[in-house]
Amino acid sequence: MTTPQQPHGPLRSFGRIKSRPIKPKQAALLDTLLPKIAFDPAKPLAGETWLEIGFGGGEHLAEQATRHPDVRIIGAEPFLNGVASALRHIDERSLANVRIHQGDAREVLAALPDASLARIFILFPDPWPKARHHKRRLVQSDTVAELARVLTPGGRLRFATDWADYANRALETFLREPCLRWTAERAEDWRVAPADHVTTRYEEKRLGDCAPVFLDSERI
Ligand SMILES: C[S@@+](CC[C@H](N)C(=O)[O-])C[C@H]1O[C@@H](n2cnc3c(N)ncnc32)[C@H](O)[C@@H]1O
Image (cartoon, rainbow, N blue to C red; front, top):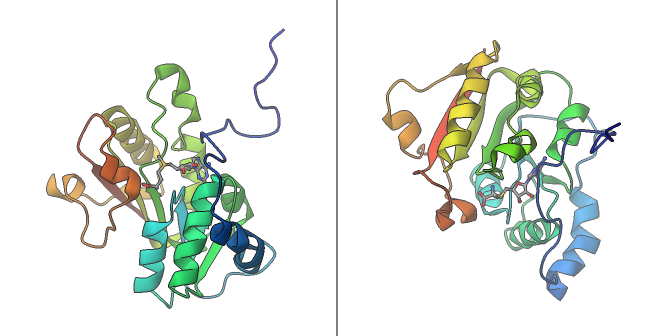
């Protein structure tokens, strides 16, 4: 008899939850700021809302929140050091429009009503390059169906990776989702970073096996 790996939910799509010790200032923000801005599924979302899944150190999240003060941006990230780093950006920039979920973004998706998000970002998700780990990748048909469910009609999903196999399989998955339309019309649309993209820390590391690919889809 085989024992299921994780009987209570989807397979883990992330690596470490904590690495190096957290600096005292950031540890203090985890205690003081995080409880104030934690995503609360019981509170209805007011106004235009975006979601960033796996924000890492939070650089993209903080910059988009700065550029769009009228938009509420939820960030989901299980990696505690990343959450602590994002809190530092949020504190330094006095951002009032960010909500944080320290945990799996799929918990946020499950809590959101249909058609509640205008934009979703999945930027350089864990690539899980080994074939036996592909099932841990975040972009799977069931998650993509959830992403489509929570997007408003005309809402947009951005996925970026620098792993060719993940780009190919993610694109296949997006194209199979009947409620999403890939917006690219020419190669530059997926080969060149979109004008509103903010370069991420992981992207800068160039750890993948191809140049960054940007797949933007629209909710039909
Ligand atoms: C390779 S890093 C990229 C971080 C950031 N987006 C960047 O480009 O610098 C992927 C991040 O996604 C997070 N992650 C993985 N699975 C996740 C999930 N189910 N929900 C939220 N975040 C997740 C990981 O903890 C990790 O910090």
